[in-house]
Length: 286
Image (cartoon, rainbow, N blue to C red; front, side):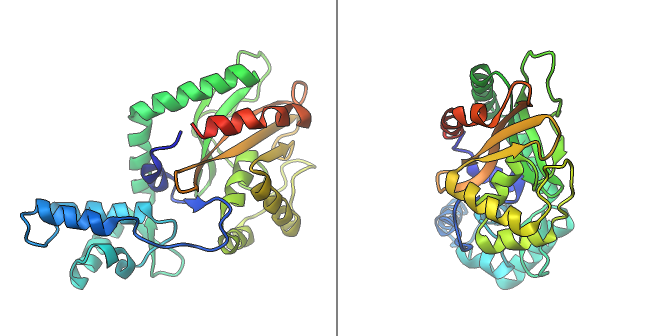
């Protein structure tokens, strides 16, 4: 499931390095890309006009943090006036958006949707779905491929089982971060400072008697999830449903999605979930 991390970073807008404690910058080879573009423009040392916006989007998509126009331009070398004008255009057209500081840019909904559709329509979707089918056949429960969005975790792909009694969560469903296995896997992947900021902003709404609504208690569990490499939902989102999730990461260890399976407590308990953890982790690395 690796090999398409740049598009996934654009698609979910939340990319992080699993287990990291500090944010990291960098343009990830964009200086080389700029040189290539300049060569293709005729060796003039200038980036072709029709490539400039694409390269800006690539820089932002390859970064694990929001970036200022000046930071975006470090590997591009565009005139100061041009980089600010192009970024302003991308913001006005809905491809980029400023973060809460009002100074740094990150992928906006339009860009994330475009990247997600490209991925979904590609052969990579077929490969991913086949892996989910293999996992579902092994664990005997519904398997999900889940990505973070602003509204919560979104079910991008899934394989259902043939059980007459199963929990229905269709593709496109949004579920909370704080009380789902996939959501907690994402939260645990965040660097400490970013995780703390996000926890402060979340409304830890109670969904069942087992939902963790205490911030400090949730923070402790997220540290354990970060160490263990998996998360459990012990009827925290829905009564009578349990789940396990593991992170899907790119070649640099950055989180891009969660792969999870869930089912009713009449068939699943914690021991059963954990017995499939290694297989689920192996599937996430494919």
